[in-house]
Image 1: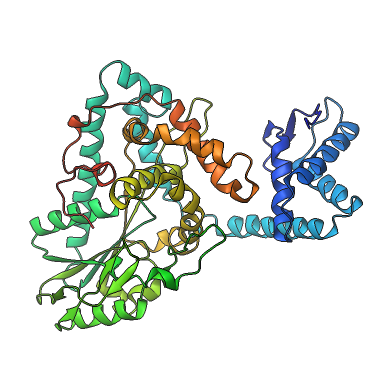
Image 2: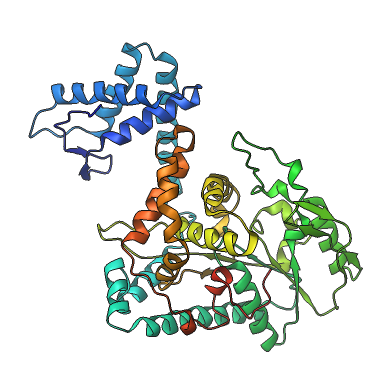
Length: 449
C-alpha cells in the first residue's frame, strides 16, 4: 500500500535539512522488530504509514520536523498499536546511538579510525586528475585519456610503497616482524609482494609468512540459517599456533607450516618446513594483523605495522561519496568467482560477516599503525563493471522481496546503481602485469597468496 505523505524534508541533529524518506521509518521499525523475533515487513510498513499520518497532522508547512520528533512519534505509534516489545527494542537502539554519538564526540581530536590526511590528499589528487566524480571518470574514458589515468594512478601507488619501505628502513635494527594489515580486498597481497621487493632493494631481507594456512577447518565454524559460515573473525585462525611459530622462527628454530585447502575447507599438517636466516624479517599479510593476540609473542618494539585501505574519494552522479567497502566488495566478488569458484551471490550474501568483523577487529585500530597506504585505484570501476555488471540485476531481483536477506539486497542494489552510471572499459592490455587491480581480475606476475 502506498503511503500518502506530504512531509518532504526533515532537520537532522547537526542542523542540516535533508529529504524525508518514508522507507527509513520502515527500516527502523523492521530492524527493531527483528531484535525481538519479528519478521513482518508489511506490519512495519503499516506502522510507518501511521507515523506519516501523524506527521502530516502535526506538521504543516513551513514547519519542518526534527529527526528526534519523528523518532518520538515512532515510539508513540508502536506503543499505542500494541507493539510494546518492538517499542522497547527501538528505544534501546536510540539510546545506543545517543551513547555512540557522545563517545565519538569525546574522542574527536584524540584518536580516530579515519586517516584524514590521506583522505584529503586523495581528494586533491583526484581533483587534479579530473576523476573525483563518476561523470569525470566517464569523461576521461570518452576523451581517450583513460590509459593516462591508469599510468598516473599506478605511479602514485608505487611511489607510496617506496615511502613505506624507506620508513621501515629507519627502524630496521630491532625489527623482526612487518605486518601488512587491512580489511578484505584492500590489496594486501600485491602490497606485501611489492613492499618486499622495495625492502630487498634497501638491503632488508624478508620472509613472507601466509597466515591463510592457519585457518581452522571450516566445519568448526558456526553455520547460519542460509548455510553460510562465519570465518571472518580472528578466532577462525589458530592464534596459539601462529604465536608458537612466530616465536620459534624468530628464535632460529624450524617449523612446519600447515597447509589449508580452501576447496574442501580443511587444514592439513603436511605443509612446508621452514626457518629464517638471522638477518631476515618476517613479513605477514593478514586481515587481522592489528588484532593484538595474533602476534602477541613478538614484542611491540620489534614490529612495524602497515595498514592498507581503499580510500576512495569519488562522488556519484547525485553527489554522494562512494563507500570504500563497496569497492572492496566488488573486488572480492570478482576474485572469488575467478579464483575460488565462489558465486557472486554468495559473496554479497556473506559480506555482512566481513563488515561485522572488520568494524570490530580491524578498522578501529588504524591509529595504532606505523604507516597507512591507499589501495584505492581511481580507474578500477570501469574494469570491475566489465567483470560483474551482468550478474547484479539478478541479485537485486532475487532478494528484493526477501526480508531475511534485506542487508544483501541493499548492498546489491547500491553497487548495481553505482556500476550503472560507470562507462565500461574492456581493454586490459594497458594494465601493468604487476598492478594491484590484477590481484582481483587476474593476470598478475607477482607471487600472490
